[in-house]
Image (cartoon, rainbow, N blue to C red; front, side, top):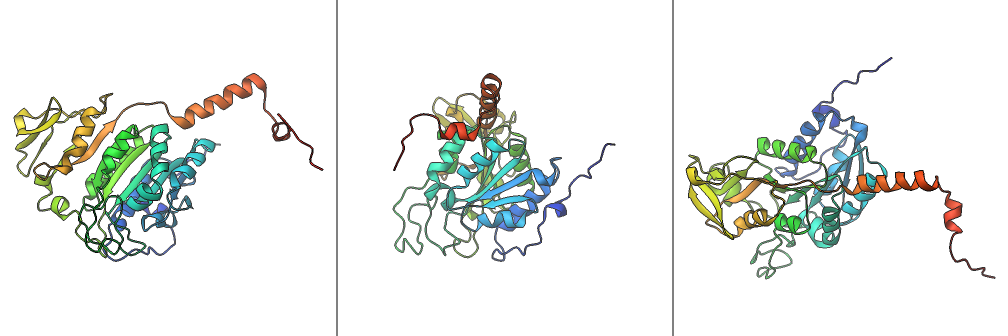
Length: 333
């Protein structure tokens, strides 16, 4: 007798834990969108796994009514790699912040990306350490005054999109916490991707870095300050959709809408994506959001499973005792 499983709803993925973020935090919006988007994927909730490190964003697993693992600072990518490799049928997601991901976790995130493990990464970027009360982070802008940089930071910040591209990520996107529709689309795109999907989310910290992205993300100016890049669509922006971008040689140029290039995130070379990722360094250019890169690449966990299957077929299933007592041994008296 076949059993029909009712489709999930957003409510099904809400845990019984009180959500403890500061009032007005952008994390609430991300949580609501994630719960709604994942419920529509057709995946039983026992097949979801959320992994986090340390930080405000890392409370995420407590608020999802599915499996979760609150790990240690910066190490979520390592845990997620092991979880997905050992349990390839799980849908594995990482919730991380700019400090957790790019400071102590910088070494771990680049290896997750280069390996192309089939894991989805949501980077909550608020350009500050929120949980530890307002120190500057690896994405804080030059000159940023914080509790640890009272006269202004002299560090050049990471550009999350460029870091992901440099590590060989097969899927790179950006969205923002105050655009529910866009965030939903972006998370759905990441869920459909086979391999590591890296999504940067502009996320506002109302207590320690309020308004960090107001100059581009505010609804009243967003259309003129951002460009939403989608596959096969012209690179146009502006409230009247009259501005465009085109790539010429090794630069991105502003142009009229009818002269704009068609955006192709599937280009095998990351060169165009790198140029686009750098747009937010120029105050005269719009910040790129949407789908920056999406290419096919060998998937780590599938390749690992294939190796194990072939080894078992060739040599048979081994025994742990035989492995322990293999090779050189010493008798210690």
